Image (cartoon, rainbow, N blue to C red):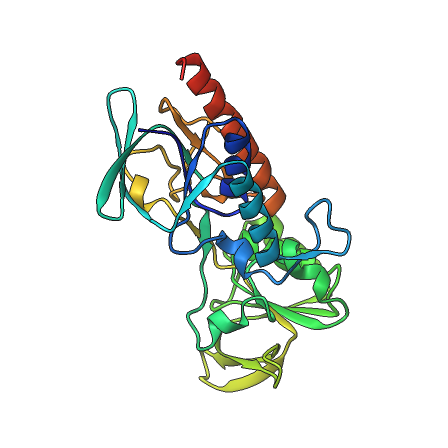
Amino acid sequence: MEKVVIVGSGCAGLTAAIYAARANLSPLVLEGSHPGGQLATTTLVENFPGFPEGIDGPQLVMNMHAQAEKFGARFSYSEVCGYEPADGHIRLLVDDEWIETESLIVASGASARWLGLENEEKLIGHGLTSCATCDGAFYRNVPVCVVGGGDSAAEEALFLTRFASKVYLIHRRDRLRASKIMADRVAACPSIEPIWNTVVTQYVPDEKGEMKAVQLRDLQTQQERLLPVACVFVAIGHDPNTKAFQGKLETDPDGYLLVRHLAESKHPGVFIAGDVADRVYKQAITAAGSGCAAAIEAERYLSELGK
């Protein structure tokens, strides 16, 4: 019987592991198939407190991992495939084996939706990203593009006007799906040029592997052209990694786990942290804060049970 199992090893999961380990709970961290989460694919992180010169995302993940391990956290590359509440504890199907734990912290994150084009994975962090707040400041005085048509795409495009020389907003329809107020703001912004009825068909990197252009196809004329851009911001949504918990833990209509207060679920002993419940901020620092809260709540829960 484990005291604490943490699902996920991004900022939320690793922060929870640090706090739980320092409380002598010897947490077991199930890292899953993508250790480090989205942070592991980020090149330079400049907005995490304490690193005035910035730090590579993978290095930040490794630092947190080492810190948690130093205090007694244990790690496994296993993936959670199922969840069952039991009498006074929790059962998890981990790979092909059921394990039991007195408390659970779900920090499994969310995965950005991508376009599915050639070389996409190689270009992430090299002129391809899903987070303007994270990476926009790297692209000052150069042209960039945003792909999408909802509120998120509109918000990303407006944010990027603070840095980029030009922001192209590429959408497959002839109008935004965004709310009227967001669509009006985009229309009123001289730095944003919408490109309607158009899709990206290819990323074009330079000889160093950095983004230099995208190939576009007009869906009405079928004509293709190159658009020089230094970065592509894909804003077509995220999918929370909640497959193992569907139908068992409460979610909103899009599958994000629901929390009460900072980290509690309605299920005794189950706590939630990070992007798996955050559809608004999606930042490393907010994930870390919620991981801290989840670990403290788990510690209090176990203490009240006399564990």
